[in-house]
Length: 102
Image (spheres, rainbow, N blue to C red):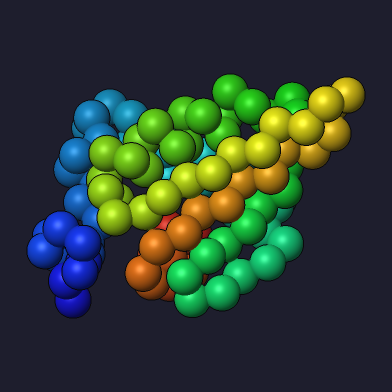
């Protein structure tokens, strides 16, 4: 499958994440996804997680941007410590995030 905007193949490459961080990244992804999925579509997943996990969420986004360059991330950080809302979108995102949880 190809991304129409860039012509790049739509594929996640975990080797883009430094080897010493991969296992931690996968565990972090699983914990965020298990705790927070509130809406799933083929092209977008929306997560809601506690405000105390802001560092975890930004680390997750940082590494995902390395390995899954076709995905987009939108993070809402509401006032007064309300839950964070992370939207991950792109072709096949639901299947890719579900694969990360295996």
